[in-house]
Amino acid sequence: MPGTFFGFNTALRGMQAQQRGIYTTSHNIANANTEGYTRQQVVLAATPAYPVPAMNRPGGQGWQIGTGVDSQETRRLRDEFLDTQIRRETGSLGQWQQIQDVLQQVEVVFNEPSDTGLSTLMSQFWAAWQELSKNAESSPVRTTVVETANALAEAFNHSYQQLTTIQEDITGENGLIALRVTDINSIAKQISDLNGQIKNIIAAGDQPNDLIDQRDLLLDRLSKIIDFQVEPNIITVNGKEVFDGQIKIKLRDANTNYLVKLDNNQSVINKIKSVDGKIYMESDINNQTEINFNSGEIKGLQDALYDVDTYLNKLNTLARGLAENINSIHKEGYNLNCEKVDNTYENFFVALTDPSNPNKNISADNITAGNIAVNPNIRNDVSQIAAAYPDPPNDTSSIAPGNGYNALRIAQLQTQLLQESDSDNDSKFDTLTSVANGNSGGVTFDDYYKNFTAKLGVDAHEATRMTTNQGVLVDQLNNRKDSISGVSLDEEMASMLQYQRAFEASARMITTLDSMLDKIINGMGVTR
Image (cartoon, rainbow, N blue to C red; front, side, top):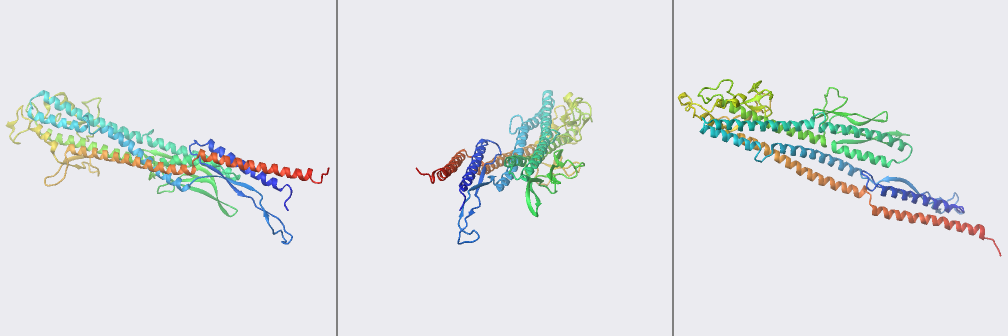
């Protein structure tokens, strides 16, 4: 038979187990609003039963009596598969959010449709040439052409500057990508430090639930910036493979780059760097191997940067095509004095490479949206606008102050069908030329501009739609996660009462056993 004091141990174990449950419940309630906290639960299990020997069963085979309860561990209620889903979808959300933010900035740059956008200015520009063709001898009309053209050129310049500013904001030394890289390296350092702490605590036989929560929260934040793979560190102990608590973070690219790795079983980090918007390992001194990501904010910024480059190239192509086509006609015309324009005035648009000195470094080559300007010489003398042209072409006697045929030819460019062309054979379209006779297709200057601004609107709308949909998906996954890992105060209060009553019952059991022993010791065999 069990000893007289056998029941005290059983009741004591019960009190200790329920007390641990109370402490865990208190910890859950205290962290109900802590970001990244995972609800914890005490795992209780019956302790091994005590065999009671029987006379007719040698060797002690007989009935068994339970010895109580023990708390085996305090576990986190976490679904690792759900964590993987959330991190994957959070990366996609971060990617689309960055694309949306950048494209909305680009939309503001072009500001279409509006009364102040390039489209309106181009319409006014063509209308001014049309008016000049009818009043070629009018100095005010000539001035209107110059000032309208100057407003158009400044609009090109301003749009170019704003787009390049957006590019610099993304790829600059203190740009968005560089800031994200700094965040990544900081998070990697914190995860590496937590690896060491977690390993030491697990080696001591304890469970560092709160430190693992902190590490998981860092992984969640990292997943919004880049995509990665988490690999547990497996070691061999007494011939068995066990997880020592440390993790490795592998970047998801074609190479075997680890952001956090193990060196002699010690957690270390490999920092990354940003060079002109591209990502390399810091150890890659010559920047030979770019690291590519499939999702995350950096991927979104790189995609958005490509879009900005595309729209900037389109804007440059439009500005150069407009300038070259007008210049080719303008240089064939005659000024108000019925003289053929010379080299000083033959180009209506030029590349103004030194804005501080308009009369220096004037060239009609390599015109872009950033440097297009009205020829300063023409601005100073509007009579040099080549508005006249022989009509018919070989009849120079038709040249007179009122001749506006060349201005009409320029005005007719508004309806000229054009196509993208590569002027310097670098496999990139950089200007617009007339569609050859007999060929189909082509667009006007106005339509070319409207086409790529319309594409911008579609891209921005798509980014907004994807951001909204991805946000809903992430919210749903987080709600599922909260239903498993989140702290419910109602549930914790119920658990608290359950542990409290069980603790009281175990304490009452000790009181009962004490009363029984008192009866045996002090009450049996006593006579009056």
